[in-house]
Length: 189
Image 1 (cartoon, rainbow, N blue to C red):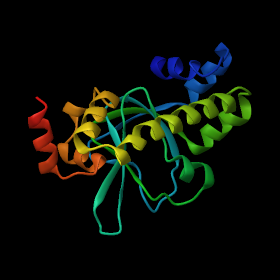
Image 2 (image 1 turned 180 degrees about the vertical axis):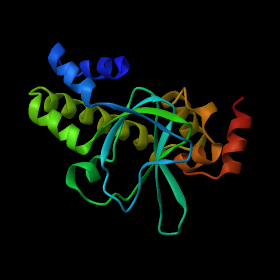
Image 3 (image 1 turned 30 degrees about the vertical axis):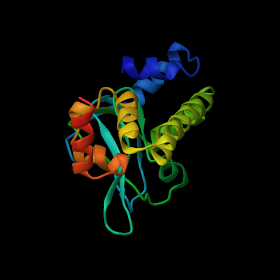
């Protein structure tokens, strides 16, 4: 819980009573490897915070190929925001890549926090803004750079992830085949 409180306090101030209320609403869960935190075709019902492990967000393209959009590791929020906020079916899967331990808030409890704690909305908005900027910064180079550069950037962006996830997910994220990824890894060692 301390990691989550430290995380949110980067984005705004809360008094002890507010922190206690947030702490009371948070629940802990384990999410085994390959299980889903939320699924395509369903409405996201919870907001999580990764304490341990790696999660990926993926979807299936029109050819039925699985595409990894991004990874979420420790000390980051996890939620399909569009689905959660707008009560619409998600088009992505949020899946544990490793065994994970998370804090989570039900939709009801999250909305209660928004209603009760005045600075909570501003904190959430700042977190969402930061995450959106990170997503753009992480994805934009993937469009314009060659595969080796994209892999090197992946290593910088996700330094704690590479040895914990299947290379097939990394290849999917980079938009290359696994054999191409193997060649790249061999050439830069």
